[in-house]
Length: 101
Figure 1 (tube, rainbow, N blue to C red):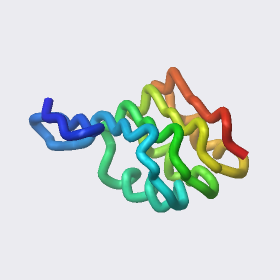
Figure 2: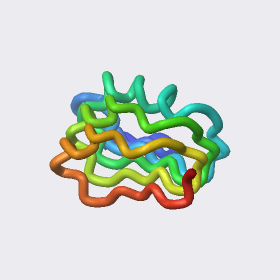
Figure 3: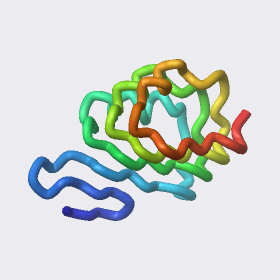
Figure 4: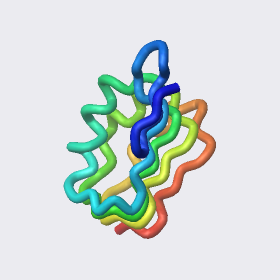
């Protein structure tokens, strides 16, 4: 696998497998960050954006990231309810959402 800071890709396909950017002072709406991933990150297994400054609601397209095993969105300013589409993530083992609004 190829690795950049916080990003692990599949060496054969180049697709993102892991995106770990905790405590990176990321600002903005979570939907603007996640929605583009929904189209290109079909093999994303780990998403860690905890301890940033993400706002807004988790977008429903999150449910299309069918390979997700771990999601950490804790300690941001995310609002709203958990989209029911997350229930379709059959491989999801860990979901961290504490410390939001």
